[in-house]
Length: 138
Image 1 (cartoon, one colour):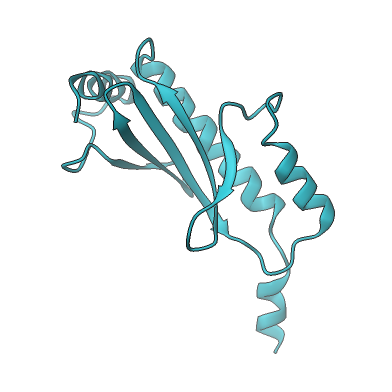
Image 2: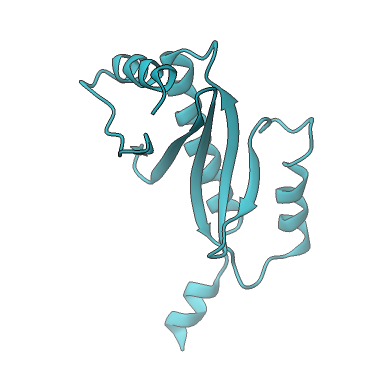
């Protein structure tokens, strides 16, 4: 892990009021945010962090309005920018974005963690389907 990422993690720990941020050997951090949120921080190189928040498995049925709402959030003028909505290889919806480490404070990063987790929760709610209810009735 780069010295710049280590310094940012130290600032983040201070902003969160914890002793240290638990990173693995590559500097990857998985933090629980709130009751249902999780944000993964990946230092891609000495200058860039990727933040990723898992949302939910992609529903098998997604109405056109919800799909349009999701896709519009990827435009450059989206209130979500610089974060994007995507799918990982396993078919899970994720909110992700890349941030420059330079000029980013621990307090700013803490705020972004909250915002990304809140966005993931909003998307989770927005794409919720009645599939589980149908499965219980069967």
